[in-house]
Length: 302
Image (cartoon, rainbow, N blue to C red):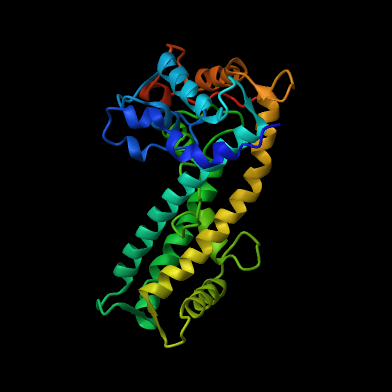
């Protein structure tokens, strides 16, 4: 098996040759990972190379060819496991770093909003001023989650707004918990893990957050302290993602290498690509576009 070292060293310049040649001005913002067939909008975002909002089979196959060739670091026409893993790891690292930077920018915006008197510090009073709004929003999210569970009968096809929710799920790869969602509110404030948040749990978690963030113990949060606390959580989340995906990428290679010779040909690679494209092309017209995103997702096979 080849080492794949060259792949890891060179992929930053090879990952997206198609994106570099694309005419669309937003090419640099295209996702590097995540365009799976069951998420039509993410599929289009990743594989729409000319920025026209649609992906033809020819466009998709050309994109896959470039990615395959970028993985084939020794140019022998096949991709072994080390090369496959190196390409994916480099691409994932770029994607996570891009999302990390975006998350930190949002955190700076949150700091500015909390700093009501604009003195560059969040006092305890300013921190507590948002507590009631956060609490009420979290309770509404939990109530809405309960209603959503009963919105569909067992086995009923998801259409309309439900299909759009399905398509939009998972676009945030880091998945940092937010108090605006029921799941995020529980992660942040459900201290005993019982699926509920009491006011005592909520207040205790916020007190712990303020104390943890106030590293110099002066009773106020500087922007550096506020960012550092969030960066710690971001980096722990990234480490968790890396642990899980390190195993998954090896498994994926084993599935793609259908003849089990330790080398993946482009034909083997594109067998999965065809399934991916056909899943996204819900109306089977040979093009993946907004019309497909409006259709219900296909049933998952057991």
